[in-house]
Length: 270
Image (cartoon, rainbow, N blue to C red; front, side):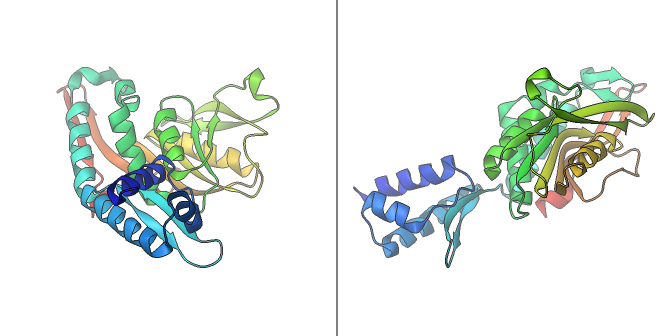
């Protein structure tokens, strides 16, 4: 097999299986090459990924080591994605009243979902998480893509218990600025005690839903090690969760003057 074809096939397998750890001998035996040739191939692939701003191939030495693809996104691509999202979100026809915006078309747009998920995968890949968790419904797309890029199972928390979920655990939590009491449920089989989770959601205002997810995971002694939200409302300034990562910040939805003020979270592209 010619080297360029081998490199292409090797790169394709790694990129199709993000965060999967391969032993070096897997590729050496598959392509009939020495470790030195594999190292040269990996170096070339890393150069391509770096130039394209798409992550990197990580080499882990020692027993239990190997190679794996870590999805990523360059600072330039982050800024481009943020600017495109800001332009789309600034359309005043999205105003729904009560300082809410219509975002379903964005949250189920494959291009936007992929870009946002890459940001979260790059941010959270080293946290040792066992699950990616979200609450239905609009955050599922981003959470599912993030889970795929991290090579982790997705856990979806329900607003109401479903018979098909089997036995469930439910809690009441305070959601929204008006402190409405709402309910969420999780299947007992969905997570194992003592694990770690990353929470992904589409929108955060005060953080009530995210705090609810933390609390219900806490019923299983599951630690939250990262939180990612696509859109964050600037107000209220005091959130119910800490140490979260947002992609965009909505400063104001001025219905009277028909202005939507959105800005990027600039820390992402630093």
